Image: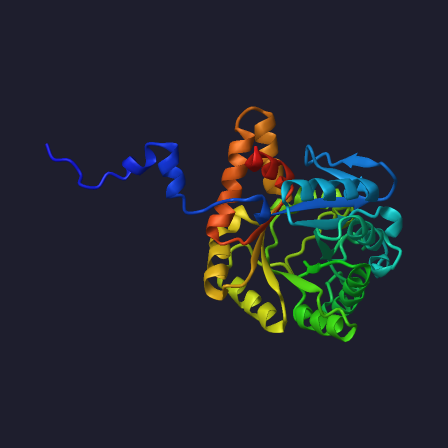
Length: 329
C-alpha cells in the first residue's frame, strides 16, 4: 500500500501550525461599526427586524463611539432615522445645519476626535416617498436634481466634521460633482467612500425599517439606479468610473452574496475596498443563532473572514462591536 508523499493534514494537526500557515487574519481594525441615530436623550428604539440593533439618541451614539475606540474599531458609520416630521418631497432636512445627522456628527467628533466617522449621503431617510433621490411626476428618480441635493447634504456633513462622506445613491456622475464641490468649499481632507457597486438587493429590508423608509417606499423598487443582481462586469465599470471621478475608497454592497464581485474589484483596481455586511445578512445570522441552529460567534467570524479573504480592506457590520470583543477575548 502506497502513501502520499505530501500530507496536507500534517500542518492542520495542531493549533500552532494552523496559526502559522493562516493566510487571512481578521482584526478589530478591519471593522466599521454601524449605528442608527434618532432624536431624544438617553433614548433607544429597538429595530424589530434586527434583534439586538437599536436606534440611538445622540448621547448614546457618543457612548457607542467610546465602546468602539476601547476595542480598537477605527471608524463608525452613521445613518439617520429622523422621523416622519423630517420627510419631504425635496428632502431638504438632509442638509439642515441643525439637522439630526449634522448634530450627531459634531457631538461624536467633539468627544471622540480620533474615531473615524462615515456619514451616509442618501436622501431616502428624508424623502416622503422613500426613494434615494428626487422624483419626477412619473415617480422616476431624476439624476442631476438628485446630485444637486446630495451635494448640499455632503457639504453639510463635511462642515459638521465628518471624515468620510459615503454616497450610497448610485446616481451617474455624482462622485465627480461631489469631489469638486468639496474641494471648492475647502474640504480638501474630506474623503469619499463611494458605494460603487450597490445592488438592488432583497437583503436591505431590515435597514429600511431601521431608517424609517420602508413604509414610504411601499412596494416601490430601486432597480432604475441600483445594479441588477445578475451583473458583475457592470460593477467593474461602475467602480472604474468612481475612481476616475475622485473616490478615495470604493464599496461593494451587499457583502457575502457578492464575494465574486468583491474579489474582482480588489484584484482589478487595488483600491481601498470596503464591503457591507448588510441588514439582511445580520438578520439571518441573528435569527438562526437565536433559534439555536447556528453558533453565533463562529458563523459571524467566519462570514467576516470570508469578506476579508475575498478582498475587503474594511467591513461595515452591525456585528462589528461583538466581533471585536470576540477577537480580543
